[in-house]
Length: 172
Image 1: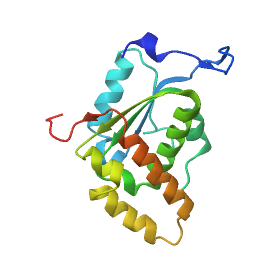
Image 2 (image 1 turned 90 degrees about the vertical axis):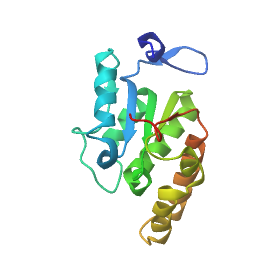
Image 3 (image 1 turned 135 degrees about the vertical axis):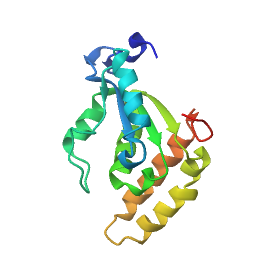
Image 4 (image 1 turned 45 degrees about the vertical axis):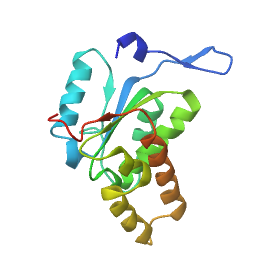
């Protein structure tokens, strides 16, 4: 990824610049799966290459609802890297991030690079394997809005169709 390719401006329908992106890349990941290994290395390499990267490791408090600060960071990002891992779908927070990322992509045509870290792309796309297990729990949870579950499923199916880096069978 060249810096110039990552630093384009948001444009309106008349192709006039609206604002500069705050972040070149937003990284979405499940901290317990990849936060202290793969994602740390990815973040370091991106920043080392001069790519302004947002990740929420220390900046955000985790909770049930996605914070307005995180939504702002997503909306101010030009590109996205989504690291799908075994427990990604167990996190409502991660799923909410993904829905917002996919909405931004529809609006501004940003690049999304999905990385499949020790999971199969088809498990993400079809919500099988660990993703299916997570949705059994989400579907059975009376405190989870069923419309939200539907939006999570749709976002995963769409993201699973994108070109990917499959790290399932590599040494990292």
